[in-house]
Length: 521
Image 1 (tube, rainbow, N blue to C red):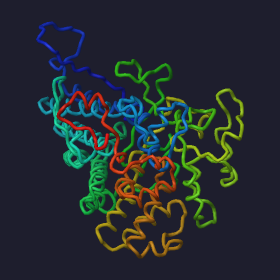
Image 2: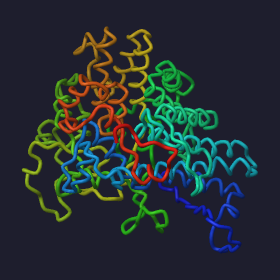
Image 3: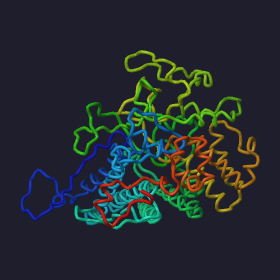
Image 4: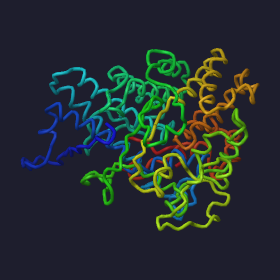
């Protein structure tokens, strides 16, 4: 599917009154959903939401990375910066809140169209039909997971919509737990129907392993450790283990030339086939299919630098050396920072040139740390809106670390959990956990605390940290919050019981009396 997924965007119209006039050039639900090709187009339209700014192309990273203690913003765009500092004044702020909320439900709407209409379409191959339906369930589950993670609360604030919506619908709100359970239900249906792997032309489509891994993520947010462990075991020790492993080279997970590799459990397929002025609206011809985040997070003189990393991440990386007494190679591919050319020899090609081929002042780097993963520095001298690098939403390394957490939380032998962490460390030539953290290798609570840092070292800036902070309860009481504050001053603005989730956009709250606003907003 990589580079070849040209999306058909069907427009589904709902008339507000009964008018018996039809435009023969307009596709409607009465003329669409007739053939296998229609079903394929419908599923591809759900995947197309990955290219919209409200989701993984751009703005969701501000919520997942910059709102966590890994990142922050010094953007001159005041409101954009404030939304990473828990200063939510305008709940309708489009780029910081409402756009992502809208796009999650638009993706769900597209999935519901498939799930409602495709079962009635006659197929010559039932397996093909099942796989299309399975993909729709998977993608709907993914967006319900995002809604629960970002907006879910104990209030009945999030609608669960399971049929094609109409303008007059006012669906009931549901709690965070109920939305996670809906995502679990969708991933359950998906894993029954999806294949364990696809052929080459369809690489990037959802698989059974991806459904199980995301279902495990939902279970873990609900602290259902045994259920999550069972799902993850399929990928690590069960029938799925033949499809997954760690790549020998850590950088292969962020390199545009080594995509859809054995470590990839699910990744979004990006392309720069359509250059500027390609847009990303629903009706743009030759739309932008690239990853935009590099343009927003790149260092000064290259991109907008709306996002930066907290320096504690570099400090944490430098606490241990590898077996050859070198710095952890993962640091090289995670961050740009002052002096990194000395820490990693032969690492001189670090955004040396601006778009005007002029070197900028080194003072722009002083004391600052910038995002490197999913940047374009290794193959061109600038970032832009058309970065073709795939985003690996779940890697096998993440699966191993989740599996370790679930094993420990299930009170299984701790040595088995330590073994999973050691696999991840060994890939980058780091010593076994017991060498520098002997208590963590034998004591459950110490191990779980150490695992929090192991996940940072392996997965920093890949969109996992916000879920981790919530799952570990670090945002639920003063003790945990003080720890997070010590790493990120933005959390001095954080109110427990309020900022654990975003506010529901005001227009959504006002237009639907059957769903609540989130607590304390």
